[in-house]
Length: 499
Image (cartoon, rainbow, N blue to C red; front, side):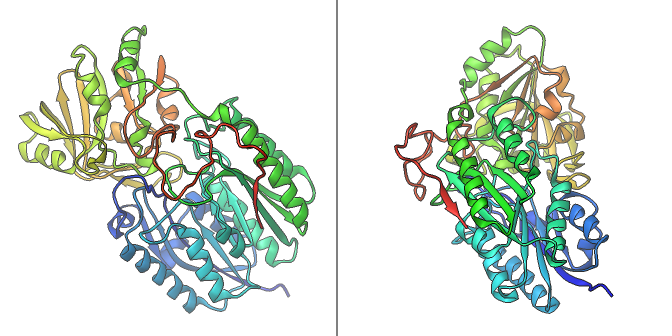
């Protein structure tokens, strides 16, 4: 008679920015996914949906704990993290004894006073379940994998695609590895190796012929070896500020720890050898617009990646907008997060002419508001549904939202920052990005999903903000040199190996 295994499932999943952005409190999770107990079992999408799909086919009884997931932002407030952590641990205590733990995490979260949220959470869970209960966690490939995470987890598996199309299948892989471990089919042994390469995600696609895509293919090819259970390649989230940050590879073998360390080290050195191919070139907004006006047809995509909500920025920059308004003939669509401006538009009403301050009112470290006059267009509640990616099928919430027409420019003004997958936010407010000369996009990769097929040109901008395309000018405090791109050569470099 086969045994039924009790597997606890739960996590806190978000990405945090320690250079800027707004603190994440409980309301952020309430706008996305804050699920408890049996609510988790109803998920059929994303990483948790993939986990549950596999576990239903195995001799497993799922013990659902707490699943809290939200758009990236600044670090979690201390109160928010303690509240979520304590509830998750309490639910774990109530579910004990368990045979295994499955954690759908991100890998680049932080809280006030806790720089390594995932490591802190995994360590707390390990203290409760003991050394013999396997813990398997899934991660974003933009994780900051720490020694604490590796020490207290039995297996860490990362998403394989960027743009992130494979959260469901990664959930499946994580659940499958945990179930196989419990059933005695394998004994995971893990090593993470990294080098001090700190770069943005603009050149980190897995869908082109670039360096990161080639390295990902090499990494996944190792899984064809009989001794290898899983491989992951990490482009570290560069907007944390933590010691020992770096990019590299993680290998899980079947009871072959030395092989895992060797293969992971090889991946890390390959990453170092490709470092120059991951550092992009940029243009000022003024130069980019001049070049765009000389481009035949449209639209031209202006990538203001330094204000990426998906990387934890507030989304309130108007650097591109200010430059566009100097060219009244240029038609454009521009997203800006500004709760005060959105409220003013709603109070004034559709069709009215309104003078207001716009921009840099949530995270004013990066610029000053502009006084503008425009006509209020469509108003809405800001709700939309994601059509793919991490939150496929989940309702997004921009809060009270308005379209402000300033000459030929349409400004999408939202109350809350939201993660960009494609163009759902624009479409929810009846804005057609294909009908303008310039599209301002603030995500370094996902813009390609909506605008890649229609863009006549894509220009990466150099603007102020907490999610810059290059970290050359970031004044890190905890991350110490040497690191690329500030140090292009590091004599006698050897990867840091975590086991």
